[in-house]
Each structure stands twice: as C-alpha cells, then as structure tokens.
Image (cartoon, rainbow, N blue to C red; front, side, top):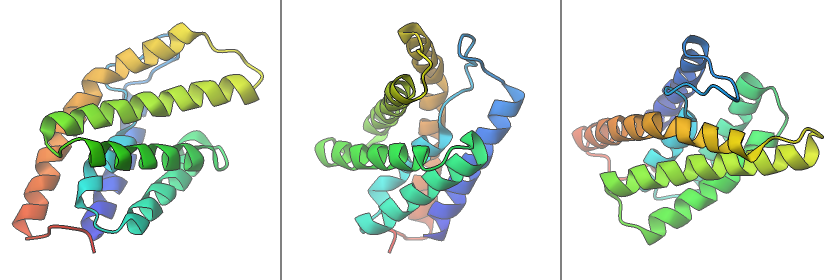
Length: 168
C-alpha cells in the first residue's frame, strides 16, 4: 500500500509542478498537461485485490485534488470516484497490458474532462464552448501516453522486484 501512496503523492506533486512550469489556459493547452493523478489511479488498479482500499485511495486523491489543486469542495471527490468505477469496469473488460493501460488512462482522462465540462456548464452559470473541451482533451493525449507508459513499467518493476502481486 505504501508504494501506491508514494506513487500517487508523486503524481499529485508532478501535477502541481507541470502546471506551474508549463502553464495552460483553456484556449492554449500545454503538451505537458494531463491529470497525472487519474493516470496514477489507472496504473495502480490492477495491483489492488481489495476494491475498498482502491476506492479509499480514489476518494483521498479526490479530496486532496480538491483542496490543493482546484480549491473546490467535493467536486473532484465525486468525479474521481466515478472515474475510479470506470477504471475498474475497463480493467474487468480489457486485459492488463501496456496498450490497454494507455487506452484506459486516456479514456479515464477523457471521461474526467467530459464530466467536469458537463457539470461546469450545468452548475457554474458559465457556458464553455465544446471546442475548448476538445482542445483540452487533444492537448493531453501526448503526456497521458508518455506518463502512462513510464509509470506502467516503473510500477511493474517495483512490484515485481519486491515480489508484491497485490496491495493487501
């Protein structure tokens, strides 16, 4: 469990670092933008034998993301939980390998942005253009694939090196 927590903390810190050094706007998205924490949750799911512990990490990441990154209350907690359920469903449908992990990470990022787009348009009173959503999603493809691929091999190596099959 400690490896998972350390990896997710690194993902959260990377999120802050990348957003500070490679700033993005809604109309000018950096190629280094993605939701590193969502990618981290997607990479870690196959190593969890206990869904309750996985969802606990998902909820904690959502709370931390709310407090540190977006300054919202329970917004990302709910969105992260929905994405966590989606990640579980996708891993139960598709085999666990590098290609599928990249696909699941990208779908998770896509769903995260889509849910946020819909909720912000409904509840914020500000109407965001659909092309902004497309721009954000297209801008995050490269970094999502890079971070997923690197994370996949690092996490697989660490878990194999220490003989860990599942988080207990």
